[in-house]
Length: 197
Image 1 (spheres, helix red, strand yellow):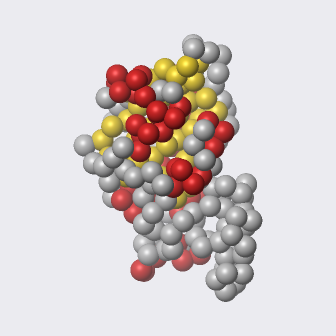
Image 2 (cartoon, rainbow, N blue to C red):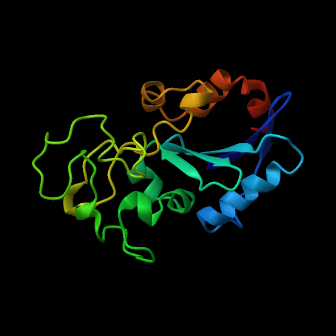
């Protein structure tokens, strides 16, 4: 069982709508869906909330034509879901584009803040060197699993909601199940999100 909703920021606050992901096959499809939601508003910030079976949640942020920003609470759990696979891009997982095998090239993924060949602890925490997008906030927590499996734990842009009142520390502390409601409450969108559940 999954739940997905779009939250579009407007002059009067957040507007929520539930969304069906059955026809969404790629992150680009999802981003296009989000951008369509802003057609009637001056602000072009849209959040896509996805959760499945209280096992994981994901947030995708689309700001106009910029590339989507993604955060997934548990990459390993999400990787077992067709909806989660939409969010777990090759770039996030350190795979070559078009690679179908989810474990290919994961040994090369920098998940602990070190570069290949560097001993652990050589990169200072928070310096951005191990970040997925190189912008000092999209770092990954959790090591690569045995055999190069998709890592358990958070993956993606940990500062995705920082400017909206949900700092990295608070986002990482959210537990699947109530996480989306807690985020919506901080945003002042709890009632509109609840209305589309």
